[in-house]
Length: 247
Image 1 (spheres, rainbow, N blue to C red):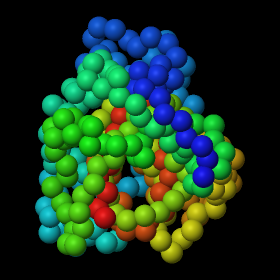
Image 2 (cartoon, rainbow, N blue to C red):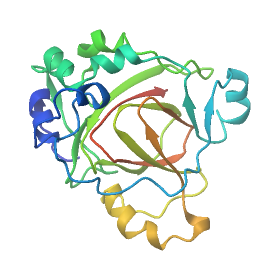
Image 3 (cartoon, rainbow, N blue to C red):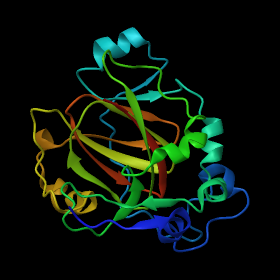
Image 4 (tube, helix red, strand yellow):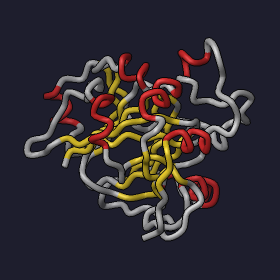
């Protein structure tokens, strides 16, 4: 396992934002997380989203069509405007700027790393005052217990292909591009290379039939992924997000 270093949230933000955040009106829209005069994103959104988007989905429909069979993007099921406001750059620094956190390596086996980000591997009991304002997706699965994991990640960072139990992932600020394969279809990837490297080097050569389901999740949207589905992520902007794992 690679060595991991603790830093304060303030240092993380300074690492994530190498230029001052936009002041004024931009604070409302992007929470102050996007850099003033930043270069365009390293990659764009996909040409065509291949994950279904659903608004006003009932629990019965969720169980019948998605819970055990395929991913779905949920829209408009919860109102997390309060949580979103508390996750602005200014508010997080004011509330948690002195907290010591652990920056995670983001490759599959964590042997070498060139992108670090704040996600998992932290004592999130210290963040209970923030999490109590989060409204999770209203759908659960029998025999599972939800567990939160909160993250902040810079443009171009992400997690290469891996799998685990089912869960939800909501983008609070920014955009996160997802790539997903069903359990029986192992993706072609190097476990110690970044998602960005995979997208640039491997993805273009994939036959259409070998390409993953993919979509860019926008702020306020929630992606559900079923049990054991392979998935990789790539942050197109500095992103703030929270996942609800059903373990």
